[in-house]
Length: 69
Image 1: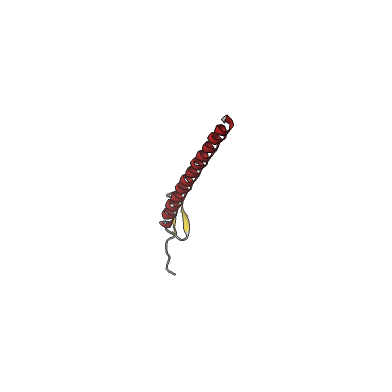
Image 2: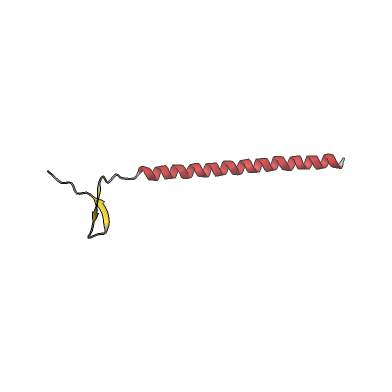
């Protein structure tokens, strides 16, 4: 009878471990999905500045001034 009890305990522990790993996996996927959605929302707010030119006085790139020809 002890081998049967041992196998039952091992089986129950295996099922519990499988359920725990499945829950952790779903939780990780959910977190990654939320982070991806947040990144997409943040990227949607990016403005296109058009062509940039170097401003020596400020030491940064700035949008090129529109010139009428």
